[in-house]
Length: 338
Image 1 (cartoon, rainbow, N blue to C red):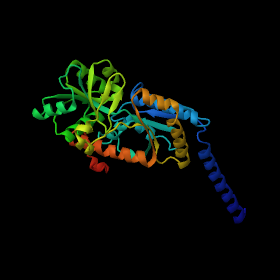
Image 2 (image 1 turned 90 degrees about the vertical axis):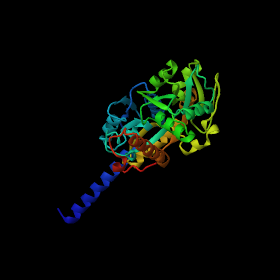
Image 3 (image 1 turned 45 degrees about the vertical axis):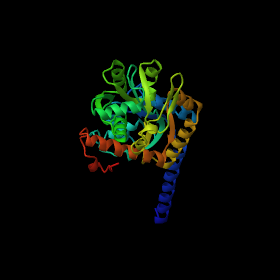
Image 4 (image 1 turned 90 degrees about the horizontal axis):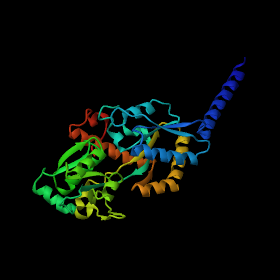
């Protein structure tokens, strides 16, 4: 076989491989996609992921997307580790929320959040509410009482380092008040404690509190967002920023629920996912879900979502470290201070 013939065969083979690779990327998906949600079935992250995947499936030709749950570890580390170990071909996605940014400092795994390209559907804003029979009828009155007797008023929220705990800390920093923080395993136990009078106030999301507020079992005082909220049948809930403008230095800290794809996946694959995500976010089903469940829809992806999650990672990681609730120094992971 001549050298010229051998070279020609090599050239043709290389061209065939390039063409085949391009065809695979352009034809994506050619087989079912699996979205692995890191939290349990029936929760907020699971519900949002099943909905967005159903709408994305409609928007993608030949697409079948199966949503499964893989819980365990810390900060969603079990599910993330599984997806991270799969090929970077776009056929395994990860369903996540803002809380996964704590996985690394809690020793769950050794990766930064940047290993994912994240697509944010949205989240429900946090608010501060008190027990229904509380003497506090405004946030201002509550803060004044907390300042007069620091640490005397019990405040319920989910575990240290959770988004609701961070919102409580931000409220303290922005108002000068000091509460007696009581951690609970989740939002529901914290809210039940407020209803029962075990704590005097609770910080969770509007989506989580809505039924208790409508039933008159919790009394909302203020949204921990720049804007207030008009609750049908309840009335206007003012923004905490109206009374305490210094909160703008610390808030808002918002939920960010969505999904991710490995950042080293092919660009063509990520482009297909992005187009389907944008189409899904514009669908009536997503808009109706947002309205009915008090979700602020986002639709952020690419550089926009990367910036959001980088900030969340810094804030959550360093807060946990300073609370002695982290096992790994954020500095060793290269996580900058917020």
